[in-house]
Image 1 (cartoon, one colour):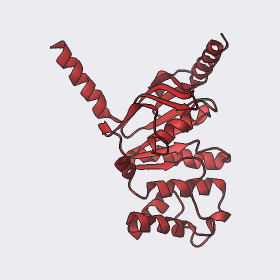
Image 2 (tube, helix red, strand yellow; image 1 turned 180 degrees about the horizontal axis):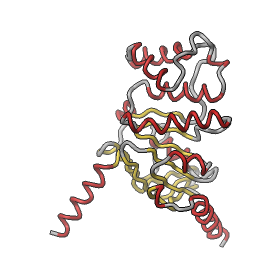
Image 3 (tube, one colour; image 1 turned 180 degrees about the vertical axis):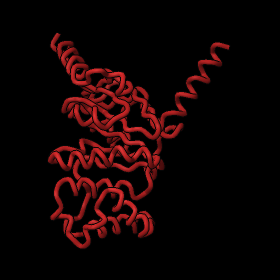
Length: 249
């Protein structure tokens, strides 16, 4: 009876998560960039992946978005083992926005829409969603960095993804751009989109995320609800310093 209860509890937990990363390891030239990473990303939430530069955040996101294959471990998406078919339900902005700077926002989206078989009505929807509906024929090369980031997010949203992956999206943005992007991200779960956002900027995750995971030197050191963290900065610094002291020994 106890075993059956545990199995049922496990199923309930699995049903609340869109993504479960299980014991994922990634090795480059005999160096472990990720070491037995396990994370649980709830549906319709903003999940913040925190870590200092070089912690392995981008590598993990690239494994999730099919840009790399894990050396070991398993990623589950929507209750099943991740496969490349799941990329149809994942939108991603990793590194720089993939835009054609000589084209307008509409034209950039039209190029992708033709490849995806998406109607023009969806282009209008995502432009409205990210606040670029009134850019008309202005070339995207003349956009501010914040506008380019939002265009990159619009491209990622074209295929109605269940999961949106954003890697350091506020890098280089001015305070207005950061605030606009923060407000945009917070709206996505209301539309049924789970967001996984990585950052090394604590204040942005604290103001945006519902759940957090902290990764240092390729290993998960903390995972929990943001409301469990009375002082995120103190928690983060304690974890990083402890991990680095262990590395010196």
